[in-house]
Image (tube, rainbow, N blue to C red; front, side, top):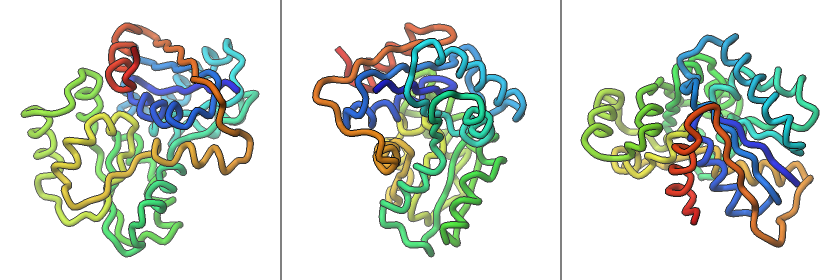
Length: 247
């Protein structure tokens, strides 16, 4: 089985990391639209257009499933991708909420959702969380975190200042949903800031979500990973080597 993973940049590697750990696929094709990252500042029609263009690229590889590892694209383009693709398409919003449920957070606990402007404005997480019975949900856009990750700035003074800007007046959360797949790469810094909160992201539950569909079983060998980008593929490969511990 072959999976394609699509993200606006390098953030989807956090999902790939979970997929590789469980060896569900013989091959993973990763496509990052580094030429146009971030998607979170784009209007919905542009997000849909970029996502459909990514699908056109993925169509060259005979994939069996497309995992949209971009929360922004999952919020706005998932239905169009499902209509157009000739294979199943999975977003990351529902797995993210599943990860929260699996974390043991109570429905009355305080939940913070952080993501791009487009993801937060879509209300995708908020609607799903409220439908699942979570009563105390706060959602804020944190767009500066994406370029930090794209520049491989995962910790230090700059990250601390950005956190202070966004989170300086916030406290008391029991869980933080990292509603952008870039954010797990700064999870160490987030854990230090929200030291009493559980950090949740889609990669924690994406494998379980796929397994629940009953279509896959773990493979016996290693998964082959192929990396592609709309520009600067060497940057993508450098981050992949560091984040995924590739040789």
